Length: 343
Ligand code: NAD
Ligand code: UDP
Ligand code: UDP
Image 1 (cartoon, helix red, strand yellow):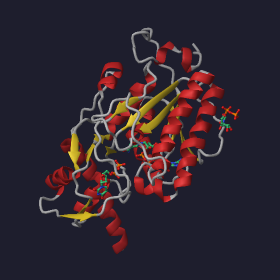
Image 2: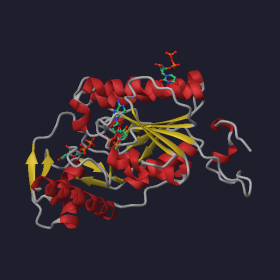
Image 3: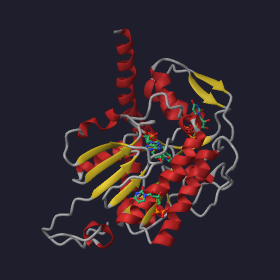
């Protein structure tokens, strides 16, 4: 049998109960923008493994082909070098829109480009969703809460964001992306989903991307001091990437628009994070204090009650269990790099 588009296809609802016995779920055509990046490539692995036809759209600003190597040659996989700031015509059922640099170092590198990616890129993907009747998922961020005055953060909190600071290209860019998403939903009846992602770590992060977990892990492996910015008492909550990917897929397949916080509520100061990295990699690792960057949020921790209740989702992997999985990948890449240099 052939099935109508996703909107009315009962076979792909999360309930599962509606799938008639013996009838296989129809393979979906799914676009993942930013699919060559850290989170995107893990998502692609899951989608390909479940039998979907996956198209990755990426301009390789921070993404790498190596992250997707295992899918090359698979007829269900396609990689398109394309900048989402430019329009694109595709025929698909679902759009996971991840394209956007996520590390502060990367998104501050060319702030105007970051805004274009968030605004024009999201507009183009929503235009595409509207044209073909696809379901659209935006990967927004906990940064929409800015330097939050409420703790932990619930989805109802509107945030405390500096509109003219060095982080604004990302924070305000994502806030506008959320606005566009809701306006396409209300105005053009596009099926949308919004995830607000909290700090996520895992294998395939760029080694020198400036984010705290990747910095500390690479530094400890290289026997360099871990660079703590400010007094190190600011907090973040760190989620392992497989937990995030599970949350994104449940959100896409479920019946709720969101926004949903997707993060691990385990909260750590940067000094505590350094301690965990020491335990996992090198008990003798040293730390070194550096001045902090402007507008750095003082604390961040997700309230995930809504995702628990509506998506039946919560993270499973604690920092002390997730870090070793990332360290293994970093060890190979850090020492692989060194070997190349020696040769
Ligand atoms: P990443 O930098 O590893 O991946 C981003 C990908 O998008 C890269 O492959 C990059 O090349 C691509 N890209 C960037 N600009 C593009 C453009 N104009 N056109 C096409 N492709 C473009 O980052 P990530 O950690 O995988 O983050 C993925 C998404 O999740 C981002 O939207 C980010 O804002 C969001 N997010 C991530 C975190 C986190 O902790 N990792 C937290 C909050 C939100
Ligand atoms: N767009 C796209 N692919 C499509 C459909 C639209 O890239 O398949 C782009 C389109 O070029 C436009 C944006 O998405 O820049 C918004 O499209 P929409 O149709 O909502 O608005 P309009 O084209 O009327 O401005
Ligand atoms: N940070 C740090 N040392 C580093 C990199 C970052 O102490 O080498 C701090 C940074 O000041 C911030 C926290 O770690 O308070 C998280 O920074 P990251 O760039 O990883 O993510 P974000 O600020 O986007 O949450």
